[in-house]
View (spheres, helix red, strand yellow):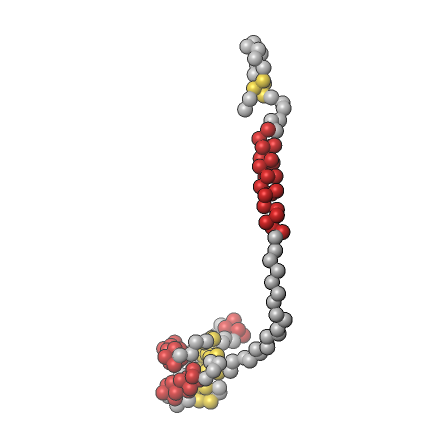
Amino acid sequence: MSFGGFDPGSQPQPMAEINTTPLVDVMLVLLVVFIITAPLLTHALRVDLPDVQAPVTAEKPETIRVSIDAAGVVHWNDEPLDSLAALDARLAQAASSKPQPELHLRAERSTRYERIADVISSAQRAGIERIGFVTDPRSSSQPTEPR
């Protein structure tokens, strides 16, 4: 901060004038930068692209619904399966099809997690890449009472 006056007897007072020299210096540097870069921003390269319409791929993959009830019985699209070996065979067949189907897994609230983990590991061994977990929000918001 600069103080004005060289009079030794007077109290030093701040200068009331604004020093605009640094402001002008910065503005001149910015002006030079913009003058140099402005022609580069307007330079364009003309490219002629062909007018070809790509076909729309509206093919949705098949959805397989696998559900597990409270007793641990696995259902494949609402059809009960007798064992995990039958599930493994169907999952292997589904994984080999193109496009690969999506697996939607639904389990009742009281189903043991061990059974759910068995189904997930079977799907992974078969090579299923897309597994979704389906829930019912109505049943999860209501607490269950013990019987």
